[in-house]
Image (cartoon, rainbow, N blue to C red; front, side, top):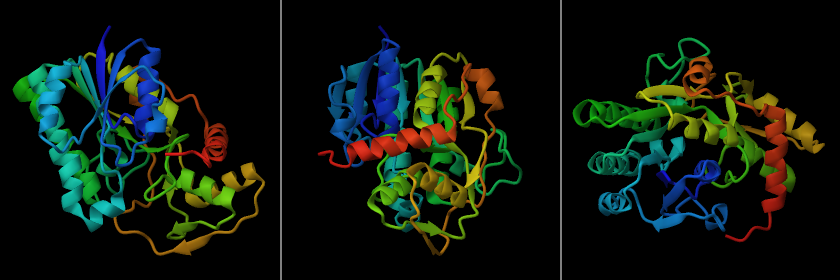
Length: 311
């Protein structure tokens, strides 16, 4: 049985990846410091759990002792806003922490590292939809950190023969996404609609995003392990909607007439983003199977069920 480590495996995306790998009969080890992840996300799953911080160099010895075949590296500081306010904190987790993971992978001679990158590496697109060969000009420390790790992965491949798969996610949404702090806009809207509290939209709401359902993302990660060569690919729906349209769709689904507030644009935010997934479909033998309306219904239902959840 193949063994995989999932860093950040107790988090929103990570826990869905863990479930997908278990469905494929893999031995899964989860590494998480629970700064944003939750025990409830992985409760009852047949996994090995290691509570640790990837920014601590001791994680290198830990990974060597586990001897994984694969590492799926999802642990990250995911707030663009926080990366602007505190770039050193962002660097500690997203660059230094990632280097610990890559160094451990090199020493352990893993078969592949799959890294969760982001549409943020592209910056403001010069054309849409954005293909994987689009120029990279990050507009935030978060995007720059993700791109920096991508470059390190390529160097580790050249110097040490470490295979990799880089997956640039568009806006991921779905069950277990946290509406607190820098939670995704879908989970924030769902939470506010449930509570009857008008949400804040930053800017005029005309900015567009490409939303991909988390279970489609988990399947893409699992497919990435089967690709022989190192690669970079977008994981996206290949379509986009404005934030105003998204809010209206969610209101209609909930039969709500709640209003909305508008605030100033946030520094580092991209105006329009749609990622092409045509190359990804061919490379990974994968395609998204959840349309936005269906995914939004599932997400709204999970928010209602989780409202009394205990951490």
